[in-house]
Amino acid sequence: IAGITQAPTSQILAAGRRMTLRCTQDMRHNAMYWYRQDLGLGLRLIHYSNTAGTTGKGEVPDGYSVSRANTDDFPLTLASAVPSQTSVYFCASSDSSREDEQFFGPGTRLTVL
Amino acid sequence: EDQVTQSPEALRLQEGESSSLNCSYTVSGLRGLFWYRQDPGKGPEFLFTLYSAGEEKEKERLKATLTKKESFLHITAPKPEDSATYLCAVQVSGSARQLTFGSGTQLTVLP
Image (cartoon, rainbow over all chains, first blue to last red; front, side):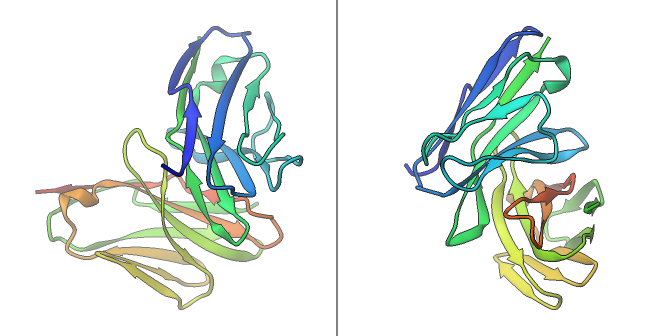
């Protein structure tokens, strides 16, 4: 089934640990995005990639890094997790021919203690 | 700074009771305004894109409209399955494909 998969579904992490959230899409979309969603703040863009090999910073990039080695995968890494990074993380993708519609994955719920 | 404000934060309707959700925005240059639906525990699902003032789009019981300062999502004769959080987002000219989201309106339709 075409779409976006994210892993893990949820994770509890000790502060200071390193964590990588995985995102894979099989729609051959050029652009991919990482958002975090917090109650009352809505979705905020962390990082994005317009094409494989390029990345850019969004609204809240500090403490996060991304890479885009190929079209399908866009992992998000927390080098040293802090409690303020407790959130629900969504990966999304869009097609350059239909760039307006972003398709979202099911999300990863991350708790940093 | 680009801002998107949605109101109300929460709305409870009886089945069949029509209403509207509001999304007001302040941006340097609007490229597009987007509406998404989000069910609990799931990712947002795309509904509409509006590009210019006066534009309208419809899908089943939903109709989205756009002015120069705000957008409305009209829900006609809602059903319980329309219960969800509705998100509004803007794409600014020159910002590549980045979206700036509002905090959403949580809609509950009671049978």
